[in-house]
Length: 473
Image (cartoon, rainbow, N blue to C red):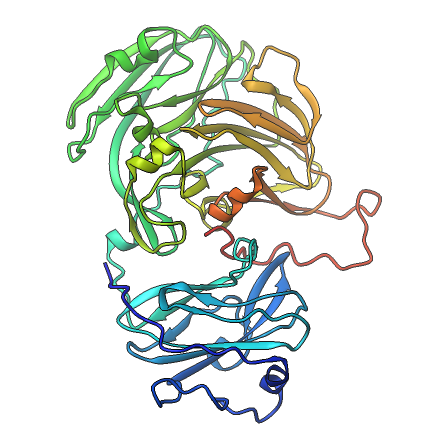
């Protein structure tokens, strides 16, 4: 891993009047007073604040970064760097790079400006962002890249995020049959977010594991193997199973081995499965959970789109936003103090890695589960109302109708359905909303014609089809 013992030499805040000069023709590259150790900056960048695509962002103002959103700022090792920030949207902003002890004054009002000056050290990749509460999560975050950072497989990590479109085959109106389900427990370094990784424990190399589907009356053959290179025993407890430990009592599998059992699903519903090897909470938080859908006789009513989403949390020794390989914290797990929240295994899964799409007039169904292991979810889609909520994933009770936010316990699930009536980008959250700051956010992109009878505004709607920026680090 790259060293991060760079230090700040000096920082400067440029007042409003100088800020106006920043934008003026002929403004000097290095304003008076920006020397560090008697030297002027080796490289200067100018960024402007903006609101675009429904997000707050930084926009490059000159040179190779001009017009780019949250541009990568590339510098040589041991450089003195100056970043100028000009307010182009009128809101309050600042800019910070904590690794270098650099944080500007706040600026408010069109044309106001500030700057930071600092020295970088060796190769590495670091975040610059607006440090005001909520602004980083709203999109104001980019990268300062020093030299050529080590991009080894362990630094980047594998993509372990589960594609939400992978929902398995619907049962339909078939007769009961024998269904074979094969799962493998694996341990691998995966990408948690840009620049940070974690040693995940998974079912079939994704978090959550595969979505499993069967029907009441089937005979399910469950085969669990444990990869040869695993360091731990693993197992599986399916909440849909009637039997010892939900299967965990007979599937404590050592590395390189396999165990099996069969069961008959007796109750329709959407159920969580997870590893149940002590310490159970550690196996779950590391990524060993998923959903199994037991459909009623005749299957579910058809819809246009189905998505598979699970919420989880990580407990790391490093604070949220740290770079590099994150280490598990036993103490934070016991204290129930997660540093990170995510949908589908990583903080980028449903914003950058996978794109959920629907069209106006279609009906969307979301299979939603809370892997936990500790935190209850208040699942909500901003700008939509759930037409039907199958509370606690009961498929035999009448659904709740016209629900804004639904509660899902850790180890629990729900199924929601709603029609999409207006185009735009709809944001999926846990309405314990501060968790957005720790990575918990997703997007549903809806295409189609706008109906002014449903929604109309004198203000232009921002381009909802612009590429999603990083909003959840």
